[in-house]
Image 1: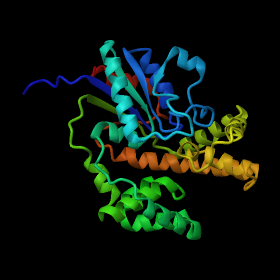
Image 2: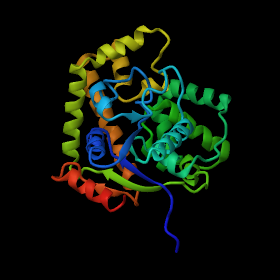
Image 3: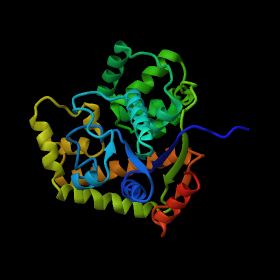
Image 4: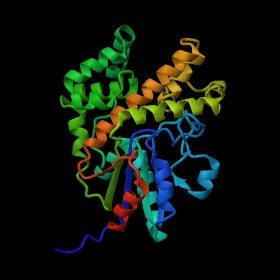
Length: 312
């Protein structure tokens, strides 16, 4: 049987606040790697503190491709990510190095490796009707409907994620099939890279929850609310945009609107981040070809290096 001649790539995946960026940078210091961000919030300029974007000092030492690609007013899709990621990976390979893709956006990893299904175009009439229903009964009620029709999709979509709920229900109406079933199918094209998948999966959720709270408080101390105030002051952005539905930003916008007080904002922001981590862990556990690493066990870097040494 001929050897697999495809170029090599590494996927470093994990829930929010699991230490992915720090591990990726440490690995880059030991191997001929270049980093590619796989994060649906980090593609937006101006989403820095609340999105835990690497700071200028870290980026000067460890550059990341696919950061700051769009203004928050502009759309960015999984198809856009796939095209940008494949181009970045090709550039890195041409320079004799291996791309290490690091992040927590499962949809981006999945669309990159499996391709994109031929889903139907948007149907404005259906979307308008669904939005009208949500205005009456709330998005959680539509999430409950999705859970009955497509439990897999509902498990990875937040109860108030209007855009994704709307799209999932729209696709089901248009095709008569669950969205998750159609996404799993992919494009059918073979992925032109040989991949090592590393998944940071904490055994103790309590440790992860503590880090989430500590990081959220550190973001507040670093000026997260001032960052959101600056975005609001532009006058051309709203909380309905995909960029500003990112965890933390949605709750900050609600607080600055006067709908919730500061302690409630903090509690809701931390809770939403924990829910995001839960969805990310659920997705990662389904990645059966990934090598799981507990980020809270001693020797994480050594264990990750051992995996790379046997792969590269």
